[in-house]
Length: 341
Ligand code: 13P
Ligand code: SF4
Image (cartoon, rainbow, N blue to C red; front, side, top):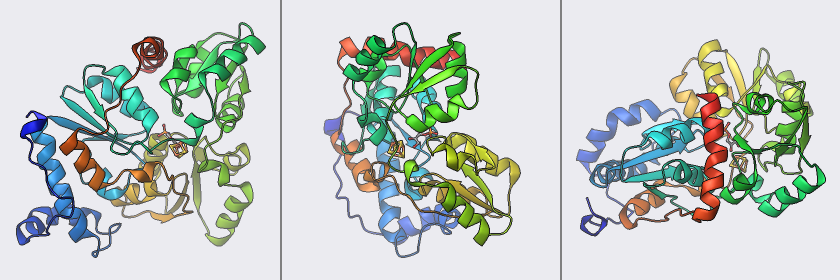
């Protein structure tokens, strides 16, 4: 339906008996992670978003770090950065609402340029994406002539445009090895580069970017949690410092971590990553006890049911990419997708 015919709704909607009844099966699913006091606020918003989504022929993509009311309530597709990129390319709709951060919305736009891509809050950035500029990459090329540059997907389109190929946390080793080079630059995440370097014979050169959520974990913290929780399994994201990965039973992308819990069904597990993910995974794994060191990503948390509803009502905020940047940036992402499909 065209936007001018979509009726606008207030974002403080009433929790009517009809909505309570319709939404009861969903609340039954998420009640272990959403307190009863919050549900009367969330339920009418979820109901309205799901109706408006159909009216606007929209698809909602949500990263694994989104809060449970978004992840379980309104998302059509959930996943890690790689899955969201792959799925964005396949979306056949008028609108994609990206419930994640800005670089994820840009990646969706690169891969599906004819679809309107909306990011509900423009403040949803990323400390890694902000740590490097296109000029930094040009300077690195001068400093390391002939060394291929791999860029983590957590970067702006302008940075992707300067690089040879993109990677995510789930395929970084594969991408680095695919280049057939002895030395490769992997930017901007210093810890990801060090962790990949430990898993390959290729020499992986790092930049100085860090994730403000994952850099805070320490090896000592993991040892302390293990001492306090007998039999605890620890799984960590590769944006953590190497000393944290050295203490972990498994390391992988957010999707890899979720798969590990599903496959192993540990009695007790600690996911060393952004903490909303444990809530989302707990819903599907009722027999697993989650120990939660709570580091929240302030950027991911900018996305709310209220601003998702407003995104659909007012078509905001549309993500656009300068075509001069978009063409080479798209090439970097498409090379990665071709490699890992
Ligand atoms: P994943 O690709 O593993 O989902 O990671 C994205 C991210 O931003 C982690 O902080
Ligand atoms: Fe960026 Fe870290 Fe937030 Fe992921 S968790 S979006 S890397 S700041």
